[in-house]
Amino acid sequence: MSHPPRFLKLCNEIRAGVAEITTDEVAARMAKGDAFALVDVREESEFAAGRIKGARHLGKGVIERDIEAAVQDTTTEIILYCGGGFRSVLAAESLTRMGYTNVKSMAGGWREWKAKSLPTE
Image (cartoon, rainbow, N blue to C red; front, side):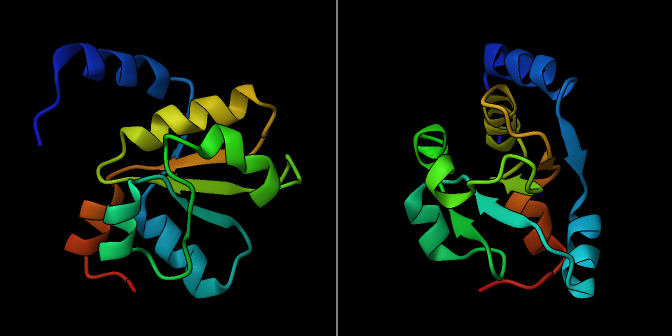
C-alpha cells in the first residue's frame, strides 16, 4: 500500500519516539505465554475478517476514548498492531501521552504476521 507523503512524514517522526517490536518477537512471547495486552487498532471490518489469535479490538478511532476501560493499569504492557505498522505507531504515541508507560507498536503489522503464517483467528 502506498501512503501519502505527509502521512508518512508524520508516522516517521512519531516512530522515532515509539518503542517497536517485531512480529517474530510477539509470536515468541505469545508462545512462551508472556502476559501483555495485544490490541488490534484496525477498523472493525478488518478485525472481523481476521486477527491475531487472542487480540482484542480497540480501533484507532476510539482507542483514546476506550483504553481506560480496557486496560486500567497504566504500567501494563500493551502491544498494538494495525495493517502495516503505521496506525499502531500513531496510537502508541497517543497512549504514551495519556500516561501508559509500556506501549509498543508491532512493526510490519497484520500483513507481515499473515505472510509469516503466524497464529490467526
